[in-house]
Length: 257
Image 1 (spheres, rainbow, N blue to C red):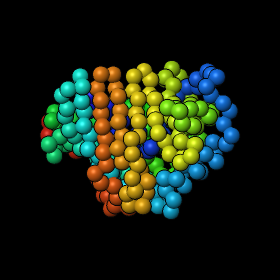
Image 2: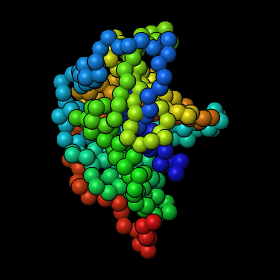
Image 3: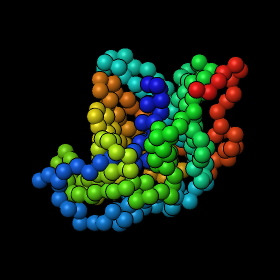
C-alpha cells in the first residue's frame, strides 16, 4: 500500500496543482478576495502551461518520472513512476523498481484495480473508494477544469515566502475529507505549492518544456518523516496506446479480492 500512495502522489506532479477533494477553510487576515475569477485564472493557467493548446487537445500521453524516496532523511530508494493516459478517461500508473513493475493502478473508464506484481495479485477498487479515485483519475484529463471536478472552489490572494500567490481551496462531494490548498503564482500563473493535510506538502521546484508543454520538471514532497523527489525523465503526447494496457494482467491461480 505504501507504493500505492507513492504512485497516487505522482499525479499531483502530472496535473501541476490539481488535487483531490477538499473542504473550505475559514477566512484569515492573510487572505484577501481575489481580483480575478476562477474561470479567468484557470484560463491563464492553461495558457501558461499549454500555450499552443497541445496538451488540452492531445489524445494520449505517457510520462515517466524518477522518484527518489528518503526515509529518516538518510536512506534513499529510487523508483520509476510511469503514467499512461488515453481519451476519454483511461489511466494507468505503474511504479517500477530495478526496471521491474511492482505496483499498478489501472482505470479503464469503468473499473479500477490495484495490481501487486510481486505477489501476483490484483484487487478491484469498488464502492466509495472507487468514486473518490475517479476524482483523482479525472485530474489526468487534459480538458477538465476545477468546476468539472469539485463541488466548490474558493479563491483568495495571499503571500507565500514574501511573494504574491492565488490560493485555491475547494470542497468535494465526499463528507469528512480534509482540506487541500494550492498556491498559484500571481505573475506566472504556475502552481507552486500543494498542501495535503494532515502531513503532505508538495512543492514544484522547477518547470520545464517537454513536447511543447510546460510541466513540473522537479517536485519535492514531504510526507511525515519521509522526503520524495520527482524528476521528469520522459514526456510525450499522442502516443499510441493499446486499450489492453488498461486491464490488469491475469495471474495464474490468483483470485480478485
